[in-house]
Image (cartoon, rainbow, N blue to C red; front, side, top):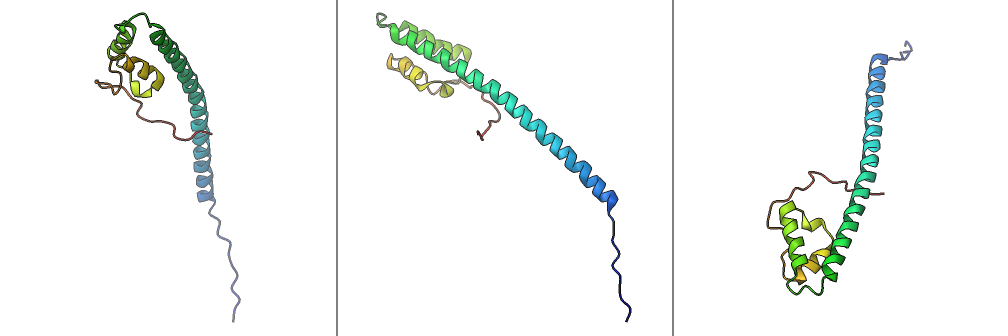
Length: 123
């Protein structure tokens, strides 16, 4: 009985292709991470700025106690419509201040522009 020797099959062309594809995947994933981190920082800063503006506007509406007609609240409500602002993404405290003075702010009675995607993971 003859002994059978095992031959080592080399798949170097496939191994090279695998390495190339893995390198591309790794580079693409690193680029995605870089972009998301960069844009995440910018979105966070923009959200903070929007929050500060909403709070300042809320204080302006609230401080206008001498105005019985709620002209400031009405101007804000009309501005939401004019600018087509998604009031669902704004501070509920601002929306409450406008609505308590008799002006509709939520839900918007117009089509709003919303992002087509959102980052759903945050660390």
